[in-house]
Length: 264
Image: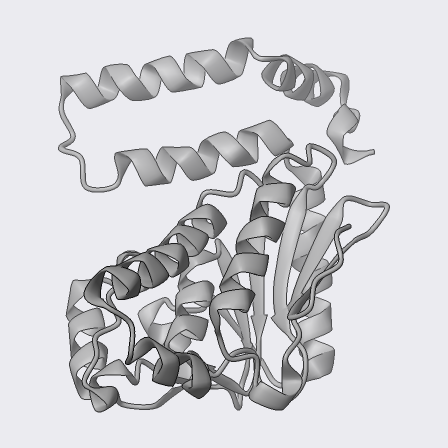
């Protein structure tokens, strides 16, 4: 995998990629280089058919404390157009993460603030250690969590998103689980590792193309009216899957009482 300054990207022979935020002295805070390198890594992963699952984690005491203060200070002197272009890069990075064809799993601990929470919301699955602290702190700085908002709203719904965006209230992992920002809470690093292994096992039992299509299904159909047109669309999609190589292999393996070929 490529060499980076602010992140690490490694892959196992079994098809799991680990993307690590690696600015521990800055609590893995975002700056322009972090966003650029994350974008490059995500574009690389998108093309890797041998990668079945992507794990996102942070090195050091925190997953990510949000925006780097030096970066924010520099942005204060940007023109409106420069600020818009800068913010667009963050929004696009999060979109690329959300649209990866592989299963994505955020393993979080320590501080998860602002853009860090946006990363969590953009992943398919999130696991947090019990003592993790979350906050959408932007309004305290006179800002709004605009670029991360589509992913957070999708994860926790508009009512809680609005409440937490405007209050900037800190909340713990248990609360994050209750509102849907994370799906699992574990007590310690040992629990985090065990859950990582459990989810990886689930990912490896599923057909990679079916995972990608299932993700697209949710993204495309959320909010649509349930009507005959939608019924036709869903029928087309399952018909396409049934006729696919994976669909035929999965059914054949089930009938033959064997494991399908994607399980290795």
